Length: 293
Ligand SMILES: O=C(O)C(=O)C[C@]1(C(=O)O)C=C[C@@H](O)C=C1
Image (cartoon, rainbow, N blue to C red; front, side, top):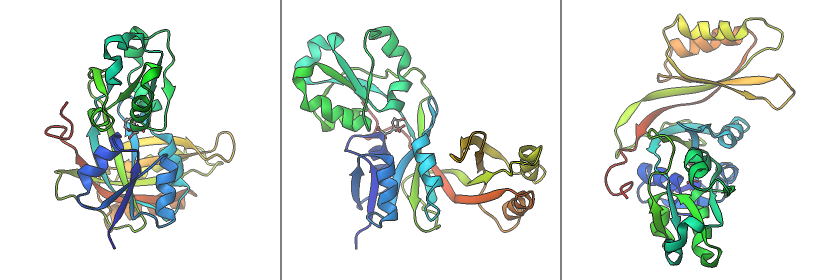
């Protein structure tokens, strides 16, 4: 049976760029929301799902994080970092009057990446959220009479026959998004198309509520073993005010000694640890056909 991969659709999203960079001939199925992509793995509709986890300008995609935390049997098996270039685009019949648009649509993360541009050029408008940048482009394409614009990538413009009226409207040049590949088995997924940049092990740690200095002790378990952490972030456990867990990226492959021993030490403090995955990460070059405008 052919492998099916779920991604945040429709066509023309950044998630589609990520999925195409990791997978070749497999069947790719777009889902309307991130939770729907993750549910699709749970229900065995797809073998893998590719979802955004973190952006350099906007930070963590909480919807992704909160949903993977709640699904115990889904693991992160790979990661691809994609350069993000946001463009504003309109229906070809509206190019001449694009500065008079009455609505601008995009994904909330894409809108947040272009705040300064929007404030300078369209301070009278409030950008409207859509489920993805691709969905915004599709909507604008289907409603030419509305005189609206979408913030999306060049593939979306091509896919939905829109005209880009201003390129690279994101506020900071260094704009990248980490996309993770999720799967039911723990087996890491390697790419034969992209250059491996390193390896990561991602864990969550829930601290005991009654132990002063617990976070300090958790960090010490990594520090004295010389384990490099590239991310630590707290998220509410949703069980009550003040209850948080920590998401920690260790810049190293799961081994037989250092990481298991650090985890055992952390658990002995009364913390609950969950390993979300140990996986290679790749950088999408951004050059060539896929990202050129
Ligand atoms: O809407 C898309 O194109 C997506 O793939 C989602 C998403 C995100 O959730 O951050 C992905 C990359 C960009 O940072 C903007 C939007």
